[in-house]
Image (tube, rainbow, N blue to C red; front, top):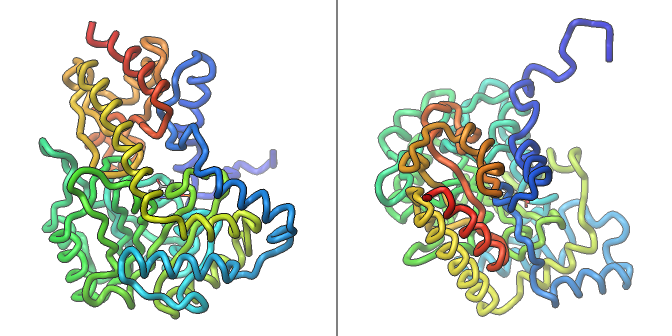
Length: 393
Ligand SMILES: *Cc1c(COP(=O)(O)O)cnc(C)c1O
């Protein structure tokens, strides 16, 4: 402690003091609950990818500082992946940057591209690090609320257009979207791209769930739309695409000037990270299409298992078109406040979930919504579904 009365945590970060995830995970432990709060898989990704990491470690690949932009093998694999899947071509030397997970990619992008006072438009509810990173960069966040209809949470394009001012520097887009599971359509992405071009905005697009889209939904990278390649920073994550969230390997693709700017910030954050894992992820990105198809099919089955259980328990379920998460409405259960509900849920039936209100500036908009993660083993989801069913009784 210091003797001054001044708070230790600076004003920019004061509102982000503690996260709900810590509170809810502690509650899960205390009560022996199934933790469907935090979004990480409870099984590891492909054996051959894990073995590639072991091999890299043993062979002395990446045990010392890897090159600042990432190892050439991984930058080449990222570029090949973007070309193979989306027809986007990036120069591995000037247009690809490896980061310490998507988290660092987001932080470095915002720290690099924002001046204090710049406005950043982001969808609300938003991934929790967006608000903190905008604040660290001295920017001002301008939320545009995704609003629920029967199908799910949708973007209102008029509200998005109205949110742009002369101070807007950047659109921070996330599709597939955490926590709602919304996947932006071709029409929505076209409108976003037109707006960005018309108002000369930069775009940072968080596409970490690019491989987790379900049913008829299709992931269309924003960088493929007209006028977007030169103004868009695209972010990916090996944690999410290969189920190794602890490895913290992510990447950025974009035009050379954008990537150079992001690299300037990134070099003073971690400088480099995850040496041996970079070799393994380079192999993972070259896995055949069947890996990605099986991954998606597995997660789709898990989504349907948990969605069915939640419906039987009495929740209104917004069946997600992508991601690890299901957002529910608790009002059919006679509840209205997600915080109260989530704090009581472990005692009531031994399951932990997250109140979506934490992802909102306008907390009242998110009050009745609660998020459950389905990236868990089938047996765990079955047990959670059977516990949740006691709510309906
Ligand atoms: C998990 C997640 C991230 C962070 O990814 P890491 O690679 O683990 O840092 C970023 N954005 C969204 C939307 C996420 O859900």
